[in-house]
Length: 282
Image (cartoon, rainbow, N blue to C red):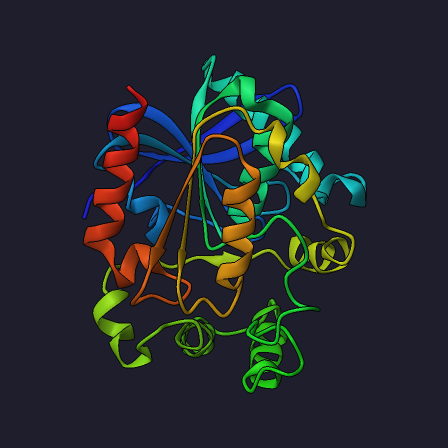
């Protein structure tokens, strides 16, 4: 499999590490606290057949600049950083695709900078805090897997964790969010590995408590493709339904045999729906 090309991009807001792969119209992909490297990302990989994908390491992730102030790790500041990356790359507009907390950034991006976007793809995400009022969410204390998920998250934050142990814990964590956990090795079969920015994760957990942008969804003025697995335990389906209802030009796709990873669990349909979305925009 072709590796991703690494670029250190100097922008008006600092230096950001970007990984590039694919051909076609530009597409930005990121996640709020993942640390990417040259092996790429499973979600980003799903778009490399149709787009030139720019996989962005955010502040405090990978080779990107550190935060001088804690507020620079907020979701809104992150959108300003992505705008600086877009400008630094020389694009007037680009598409955006985000999964999970990446999708949450996509919603915020669309609200504040639709003029910079061609379209928005939001997968397994939410426009408000999704834990407190949903017992279907694995981050809700009533969920049967809540305690184990918390243990795994805390363990993965440890900087001195061996690569082997990190992989073992990451596999277990991911299996909790698969419709058929026994298919893990079949689905995650590429040489892709990534880390987690503890600083970004810790700030996100605090910010999430006051996160609710549902009343601003109407300000997203670009076409949006909202996708979610029927059995998503991280950002349950009702939050995707809510986003699709609030975004004026949106299309909702529900994957009946998926949990949090429809781009792997139903990869063929995921690609078909995305390509159909692109065709319908033209």
